[in-house]
Length: 126
Image 1 (cartoon, rainbow, N blue to C red):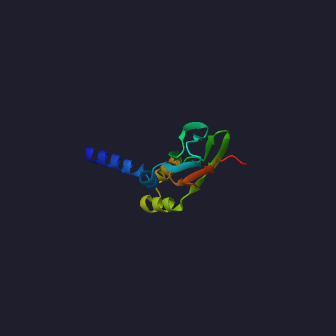
Image 2 (image 1 turned 180 degrees about the horizontal axis):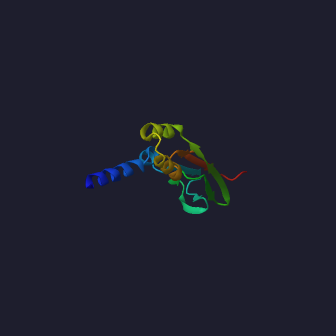
Image 3 (image 1 turned 45 degrees about the vertical axis):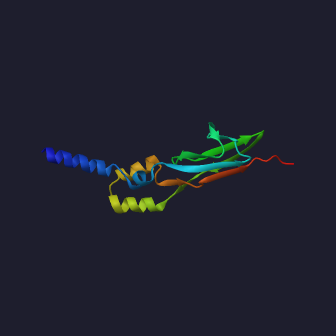
């Protein structure tokens, strides 16, 4: 009886993971730079540092990266894109099991960010 319980627990753990979540995680790195450098960086309104820097952004939703220095300001819209490869891999590995698909959808692991770099020129206009 104990063997069956352990087997069921192992099957549940296997079924509750998913390809994209395990292999790719739920965040992407985005490189933020500016001219001139050492500009302040905000992500979705929160201060995160100064350029140049790399920020880890969740794939669950879109982001706005704002860079400012000396009264100049600019922003990059970082959107989401869906990678069909993860969907196919989940289908091949887990078949019709629904739980792994739900995990990937909820964590945003099936998606990616549409930009990996944000460079803004904050040089004042003459």
